[in-house]
Image (cartoon, rainbow, N blue to C red):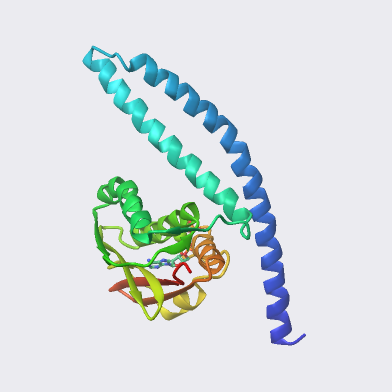
Length: 239
Ligand SMILES: Nc1ncnc2c1ncn2[C@@H]1O[C@H](COP(=O)(O)OP(=O)(O)OP(=O)(O)O)[C@@H](O)[C@H]1O
Ligand SMILES: [Mg+2]
């Protein structure tokens, strides 16, 4: 067997494995969704009960219930995004202001970032053409890239989110000043199951790439060990 053939067989095997896991994960996502919506419903009832709270203790409970509700909504969003992703090809592309998606993501990710000593610095271009986006999938892209950035800055750092238009394309850059990566890691980033983390699945970036591909976009990465990493996504403007 030639090396090429071996690599192609290996690739086919990984792709089959990926498809199998995607199916399993899709099933799992469905399984999680039902109890989650029961929890959301009960939380809503609890919120109603506590709405007229007079004692301080009850008011504190109300705040906590509202936080859990927000987290539940976020989990539901992720599950929906994932289930959508499992059916990529049927995305709902709507001409969207990418800056709005990025700003909303920053609002959502800010508390998590703060907790990890990460400062988020947005540089959003004022005159950005609309892009045909599936916003929940694009949020997933931002989340996967931001989590990687966060994990690359264990003692905190700077996470820059840029948008700009150039040469009839719309760009989104996610930049961190974390530990960076060597050339071997950089060349394998988008391989399914490739991870250098003890608990990493190696699915974050393949998922990102698949979503970007499905938007007719491209993604590139530049990185320097000890300096940081920049992911740049290029998207076609909505026609
Ligand atoms: N911003 C970054 N800085 C440094 N290394 C990175 C960065 N983003 C990705 N990497 C490297 O690329 C690898 C693959 O990333 P990917 O997101 O696909 O998987 P993961 O983060 O290891 O696991 P998960 O499936 O939980 O996302 C990481 O293990 C890490 O080595
Ligand atoms: Mg990751």
